[in-house]
Image (spheres, rainbow, N blue to C red):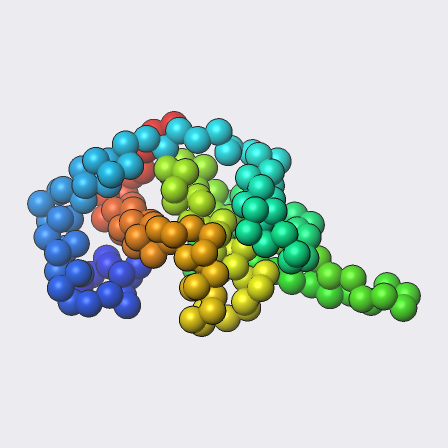
Length: 171
């Protein structure tokens, strides 16, 4: 179906159901019923860094530290992604220094906290697993037991944004 690019890997049964919700102008109502508010206090890069490090310290204490976590307004346009994790290694003298950076699409400032947590967990999982494989998704489930449902709901929200052309949540 046209406009369901975020649901491309899902079954025809799912995409048909979502298409009907869009046609009936019900998708926004379904999302609002499940996630009534987007009011979370994580609006600055500093707050996002603190939030991300808190999750990292709870689940990935022994992984490499994060050097930067920030919102990025260009991320979805440039990378066709919602978040990115970059890993840079540099030789400094006799030592190998590495930096891990996470960038999250700015649209997550205006979404429910659950959607933000899903993308943060996803990017944190890349600290341990670089590829989207079974171990990667098991790690995501470990950090957020509802990860797969939240990913699907985030995809529904992105589909809503594409079809409606305006945000569901007004901050």
